[in-house]
Length: 88
Picture: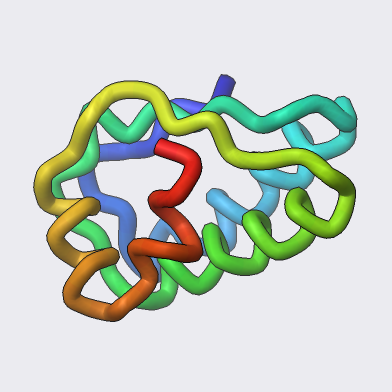
């Protein structure tokens, strides 16, 4: 399981990408806990979109754990709800 930080932003994007690759190697659905996220930006969401794309190609998905109103709001504002949040 991957626990996202409170501030999910460009400063964390490279770290996020590495953590995702570490988790992605297992080949299972990827569980991501978003409960602590209070800030999110487009760079971090781009990393998550790439992850979602790769997982869906392999018949896998992101399993979202917890709830983050800020993340849900940002995803909806950017029009990514159907793509990113369809597995919540």
